[in-house]
Image 1: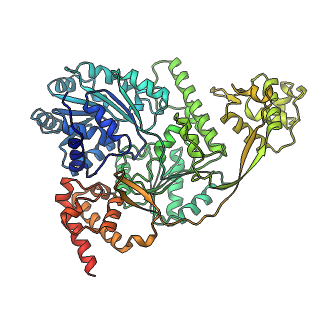
Image 2 (image 1 turned 120 degrees about the vertical axis):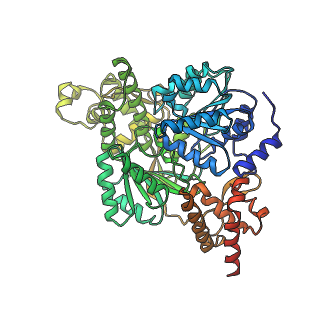
Image 3 (image 1 turned 135 degrees about the vertical axis):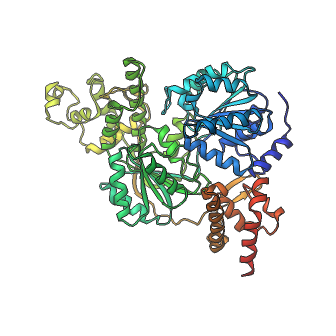
Length: 624
């Protein structure tokens, strides 16, 4: 395999993608692939995973096959690549037979550098025959967590990928990319795809520009209404657990005067397509959706993602929340939590008809994994600790301290000594032999006389009625003990509490246990935050610049120019330029093509196509 100098990599990065330097870990991934090594790369949404394989695809001879799970994901990538002057194509169910034949013919002539294909196509004889006649330099597996049963979106079709690769001669480099993968899932990916001595790159899961928050409102819709009124001109996604909730909520939001549209699998394909397009093209500001929406949506100006119901697991939540602030701008990721969300999620897990299982044993096993992930999500929603750090620790990182920026960190808090209460809870769980759930444990501690307590003679235990604290205080303490390993909870359909691995530290070693209690949220003034290009890091970074540093009228004018260019090509505005590029123009005020080439995101193709339009607008505005 050829060697590629740092200068050549940087030249290609600027030419095709308009960036003067790589982001964190991008260069390491590119170097690994260009050296001919299989690579597994985990980067959070918005960190620039696509560049890691698209740039090597341009430098290598031959074609790169990208395996992607959704048509919308393919379309977005194809549109972006075409704007950057990169020859590419896709093969999916929307293409006619004659169109697929045209792709085959052009591919054999070497007209494409990347071809996107769904995993279901790989085991068909006609596609395998086509692939064997190509010089394939790289096979890229996008959304690679789908290959793992431990992942949140397991797809059987992904398990056939290694068979496809084994039939390509000579064997191609295989690269796998995902935004969310625990250590267990990363191990699974490497094994299931049969990666050979892979370079494993985990760039870090932190999305510093996202503000994480969990709210527990008594009246959810009133809370949502207040939240939206504070963000009248912002674009956002609202996720719900059920189609019924999506339909009802979207109508209520429209009645408030907001431009919103629903999205779920129960709508016709035509309606889903229309509503998605309206959101992408900024004709609709708010999309209300089930988790069927979002993968492949690279919309850069989403200012918030709000979960009206608690999602099913942290992996799904982080992926969905990551659709906010993709351009690096500050954005909100908020959950409106209630206890009913747990029951709804359990019902959806237990009664799911959407998935197919190879055997009853596999169904039992996979559903137990889903319930385990749901338990972790519930603990996240109930912890008083730093939310960002809870997420990072879940994915195996060891953050140094609190982030001081999430909903929990931004609350005034008191420290409470819960040593005695913890001892009482653990003693009660021990005496109940680990056979009962959280509510029954609390019933015993609170001297309940309900039928279940009496039926199992739990009122005879020495721990019966030993707690004077309110139920919510006991619930919070149990959550704290679960999060910190003093208690454990089973993954069955009816989970029960058991002593955790650290229980003896409290019961025998008598350590002091302190828990942070969140109080009223602090009201803090926020400086206007804008983004500028960092010359040292070569990326868009946050800087505390006063709002006056950006001419808002010029910014609006540049957005209008972008909208006109996008409409003429029937493309979403963000495909032309992200807002961050327009902000960069407002700061640098380019007056020549050479100046314009220094704008973040301006490569050779976009320089030739769009420089004049934006430079002329800036010149005219300066004259005014």
